Every structure is written in C-alpha cells, then in structure tokens.
Image 1: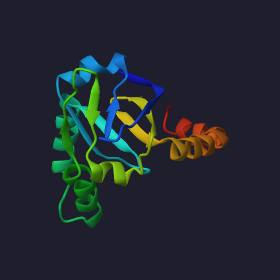
Image 2 (image 1 turned 120 degrees about the vertical axis):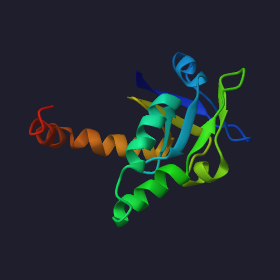
Image 3 (image 1 turned 180 degrees about the horizontal axis):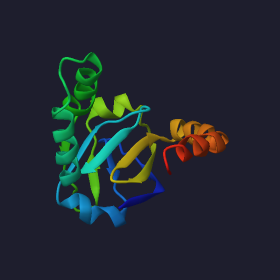
Image 4 (image 1 turned 90 degrees about the vertical axis):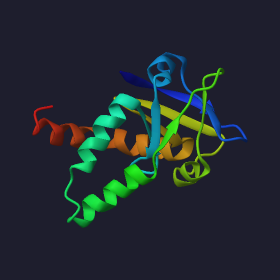
Length: 143
C-alpha cells in the first residue's frame, strides 16, 4: 500500500529517488505512465498488468475509451530502480507533467503520483477548500 506525501529532487539526468518504504514493491517491476490532472502514475508491475487488462477490454468503438487507452498505454514505460533507489523518468513524461527541480510523490494506495510541486500545491489547496462538498458527494456512494 502506497500512502503519504514526499518531496524529492529531480536531477539533470531526469532521475528521482523513490521513497525507501516503496522501493521493495517497485523493485519487482514498475511502470510509469501519463496520469490524470497533469501528473504521472507509477504502478507495480502486478497492478499495471491488472489495469492494462481492464483498459484493453474497453470497447474500441467509443472515442473516449480509445483516447483513454492511448493516454495510459502509449505513454507507459517500464522502470528500473538503480542502486541509489532512483528511477529515470523519460523526457516526454517529465514534459507532460511539467516536472522541474522539486517533485511531490504522493502515495495513493495502489499507485504513486508524481507532481510538479507548484501544481500539486494548487491542486491540494483547491481540494482542501472543497473537502466538505467532496465528502458529501462521496457519502452518496457509500464512502
């Protein structure tokens, strides 16, 4: 389970350290892809395989499912963690998420999200202001 918020530096070679507590799970295989809200998603290989299978079952006759499939699958790349616990993020993904020197890594149970620090702070602030309305809507779903 991935939880928590961590701040890490992105080096000149596009490498970022993965928090120590997540490295073992990701060392068995990991995939990074374009996420939603202008961030990147990192999944364990097992979780990615499950998600990719679900996406592959979506009807290709629907424009939205084709677009979502392209966003998630075409942008994906396998990751390897080096001896220092770092992964190299491809330039096209760094550009997509507008990643710069400081990255926020957010644990969201079955995935990690990598955010530009400023984008994350704006998103988090806006969400915190709306937390009552969000809780109300989720209450209708039984959460």
